[in-house]
Image (cartoon, rainbow, N blue to C red; front, side, top):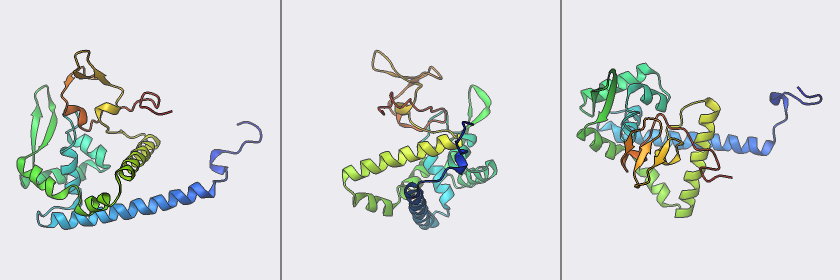
Length: 213
């Protein structure tokens, strides 16, 4: 350690950012609680809890590399046991189906059934959130999305977790000379829809490549 320098933990914190972080924590907790309460009420008719809505929501947005139980547990930050119980319940209700991987018998793929897609449409997005977003202007919504995405990425980097982003913000995403799309990691072609889905193998672009400073 250089002479005269304090360990990072001993450095005094700027009270303004600390207060802002505390307020941000409070707001995000209240928003999360409000969304969970609405999900609980919306799922009551279907006999579903908020965690089941989260499972349906993820399976409705993930790609073919990311639709297994392990990826689901990583994305939701839940234990394998909790995820297995949720999957089993959703299978019994006919909302989720599983299939084998033709190339690897050890892998399982999960997908929404037609009934699962209908249930998801009733649960997400929450009506209260839609109303709140409508009350904001377009510029406010865009700025909020950008800020929240940046905050999420920062937290994921700090925790060392997977980013679960989409192709357009991934360093593996390749555009072909003929206008097609390809994953540089798997070398497989991607459809336009593929490029909009969440991927477990996502790795963010460097700031300059992503349009940052």
